[in-house]
Image 1 (cartoon, rainbow, N blue to C red):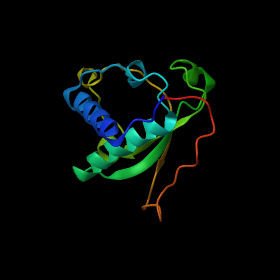
Image 2 (cartoon, rainbow, N blue to C red; image 1 turned 60 degrees about the vertical axis):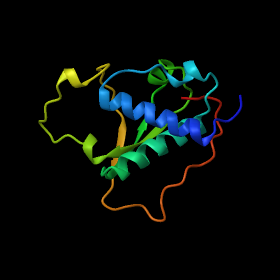
Image 3 (cartoon, rainbow, N blue to C red; image 1 turned 120 degrees about the vertical axis):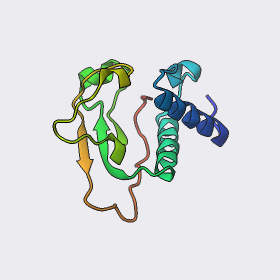
Length: 134
């Protein structure tokens, strides 16, 4: 499959942010674009994070997801993934989360790292060597 261009990445980031803001689900990206590569998914993630940061959110950490084989089998991936934690994602101990703001409520333990200070010169992503996609 051909690599999506920057316009598709930007449009996809817009659609994901709109879905989050409006609290409505959208079709999985792989249903619209079979064979979506992990590198492309991370480009979309970077675009959405950049937009959230530009709008005032702050990066407070990073997370590793799909770290168990059982969780990887659900969406059909074959390796863990990573994500960025923003300050508006952090809930204080004892906070209440109302179900009405969740689209598909589930609980999954994930590894997260809270940073005391920014990484310098910045995190880099190693080249993907697996065969899976998000």
